[in-house]
Length: 286
Image (cartoon, rainbow, N blue to C red; front, side, top):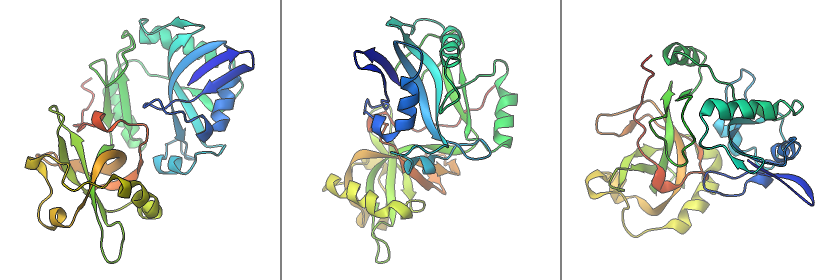
């Protein structure tokens, strides 16, 4: 979220990871950002839909754009610029202290400070899983801000397997115009590798997905030759340019990095396809 003051007053702009302007998608959050008592700021955060038990619902977020529902919340977890000054070289602890101070000036609203819990990660991870959370993120409190992909200063530990994948093809059937999505991820050599197919979870937006996929048609399979689908999954597939990213929940990774029992959760317009990697599970070590 970028907050800036000009002759027309303060305004806030919501930018996705791919620098798309999503301000109109979440007007209530943008309005709250414009009310912050600051001339200029750049805040890193995430829009979520909160369930009554405090967990988040990514599927509900897909249908929340343009609305001002009371469950829409912007969790702010980092402050990169403040009053024209870059804070990126400061340690995370200092940036978060300034962020908390900035947000303390606002009345109760949809923008919330994302608190942290210093200390051992393993007990907190176990508690998160017991409460059916997706997982936790562990960050080095003394680290400066580093833009771009994840690095050694922070890691995500998941209670459930869930990540983004790139769509490289799809299947149809007599009973369903969209029967399954062929999904994959990029390896270290920038090759798109097949991870499996997902055939559940998208039925309510089937027409919308097809409308996004058909213009991306390709004459040949975009997956690397050594990881392509086999049998009917290959012969009957309709291939597409790998530019659509989706979020998928699944049971586990197989040893050859395919996924088991996947379920579609939504489209991720904020992710650059080339940045999608296989996120091998990690657990806190202390």
